[in-house]
Amino acid sequence: MNRDFLSEREANTYSPLSLAFLGDSVYDTLVREYLLRLANTPVAELHSKKIKLVCAEFQSKAYDTISEYLSEHETAVLKRGRNATGNTVPKHTDTVTYRRATAVECLFGYLHITGQNERIRELFEKIIEEYDNDVQLSKAEN
Image (cartoon, rainbow, N blue to C red; front, side):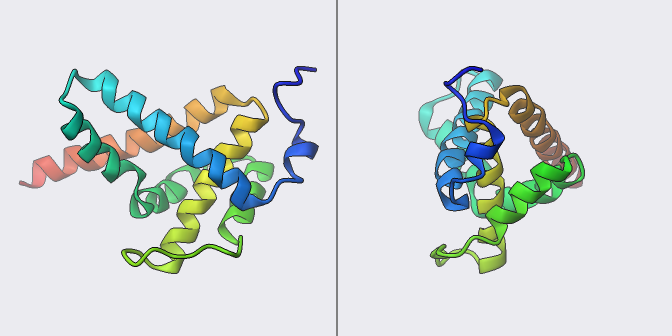
């Protein structure tokens, strides 16, 4: 067994908010890599685009996007993150949205710490596919 990663049993001992702490970074890195690969863009523009993809509102939508693709165990981790207490909710969003965003971060942290990087990529691709579809629809409406 690779000791760089935790077993599922070990990972389940961590609080959902601790997993979300790690998952926030994992998710943020995936978004940054995605944006960087799109084009060689000025940093200010990359930052503006990143903010849209890492905000609680977008992550709450991502919750819906990935929910149908999750295993029973992944769904349990997602729900643990959603139901975690102790979140202080930012002024710019509501409690439900913020908790759903925390749930996505918790799942990404859990998957990362258990070494399931391929699964992280699969789920992130589903999120980005949905984002790309929304962007295309928005452009078509204008």
